[in-house]
Image (cartoon, rainbow, N blue to C red):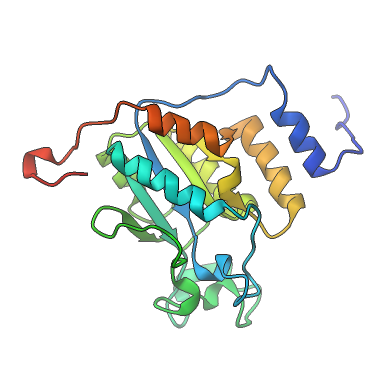
Length: 237
């Protein structure tokens, strides 16, 4: 069995090498996508208020808003998730047992400030789904898998954070459920560059396509659009 490869590259340098490989294979886009925006709540986006928040690309939220706008124009579902728990955190399970501080995950309370979606986000409450997800993957123990089946999508576009946590877990979940998975690079973020770039590499090499925001925007902008699945009931989507 060959030895594990070693390298002096930093994660940032390794990522640059991986994404510049002209021979890298892609899963590609399918016919219809769902845009799933992961945990863009104040606990993770409001860097002036919460120690748990982080920022990678300063244009992350404007880029995500642009993708949401285009997805709606193409009759593709837009989903926003947030993490929040009961006051006693029973629904956090073992995930809530490692620490117990005001910044701990299990102390993000439903209807609390840390659970609020970032006010800069363009959320259309008449059309978009807003889902409380309690675990890392968007495919675990919530209605998102059913929403994707209902909308007959074959591709998921994942944004949000963290790259090394919920985005990666969701990319693994998406592939495991048979979806083509697209991650716009500028639309995901993490607390530190080491897990951020290392996990972009893993996603690209194993679970999905990490593409520039401009490529994802162009695909949505050029797409012919999908017929509204609720047209018979007179409710556009």
